[in-house]
Image (cartoon, rainbow, N blue to C red; front, side, top):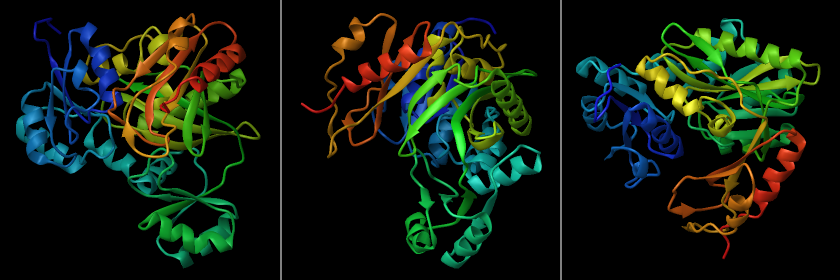
Amino acid sequence: MTRTSPGPTVGVVGGGQLGRMMGEAAAPLGVELVVADPTPDCPATPVVRDQLVGGFDDEETFRRLAERADVLTYEIELADPDVLERVAEETGTPVHPDPDTLRTIEDKLVQKRRLSEAGVPVPEFRAVETAEELREACDELGYPAMLKARTGGYDGRGNVPVSGPEDVEAAIDDVAGPAMVEEMVDFERELAVMGCRGDGERDTFPVTETIHEEEILRESVAPARASEAVRDRAREVALDVLDVMDGRGVFGIELFQTADDEILLNEIAPRPHNSGHWTIEGCHTSQFEQHVRAVMGMPLGTTEQRDPTVSTNVLGDVDERQPATLYGDEAVFAADRAHLHWYGKHEVYELRKMGHVTVTGDDTETLLSDARDLRDGLTFRD
């Protein structure tokens, strides 16, 4: 790729924190970003060439984005794959990952069926739309079970535990649309693998342990505190997942390690993922640089890890939506090998992802304790 100024351009549907960190990673490569997002002055705007304001299914916005870009990608599954495909055909601007991959992943039921058919191990699941269908499925799968909205869910939204028959009616009402129900997995830990598909290449970042509370990711620990055999098996499953995907890019692959050390696929994100933020400081190539390399058709970077790394999310801790002012960050800046990432969101509300703190070092348990202490010292309360 010949270096010019201005350089080659990636058009990104979505301008949230993922687009922001993608822009930060693209600049040293000589690659520029233009993002399309419905929120004016979205988080990515300070670090990208330009923002187009438009919805995630706005064909005219997508067309304008494609006309300014050498390749299109997306940082959010709300991007309409049909619109992306039409615009790509009309403008000749390729889309990576392929819109077919987005179609597969955006519907959790379609995703599970496709991966199961390909031989990827998944929890038992059933399609359900009514309370009666959910009751019948839970009679087969057993209680408790997890009901999931087929589309639109994230950060635990759209996921409803079903503890017993008495929860069935409320769970269906809560999801309010087509759904699927899965057996509740008795897992030892949750894992994640950032998989990468390049031009004739595929690779994975080191297996990460992810710690959730209320279905929201709180901490990522790399390498995962699992045996080498478990990590090897997780990587094998992730590579099998990549074989089912179409197009280039980074994929967040969420997994369960069961109580008997089996690996089951949970969900896939066709983009950089929260569980891979640690790679910015923890690896020679971050997941964001890797995604830019991949979609541009450049060789993939090494996924080698530098040091043990822990990343912890900074979440909103206020009762009502309000302007975002972070307090207590002095301790992060004073700590050795600690790094604050601020997402630039103007408003904060309860449990909204506002940033993250990453700590690198030698001993994983010490890193986890230090990262939690630094995070717990941060607040949006005056």
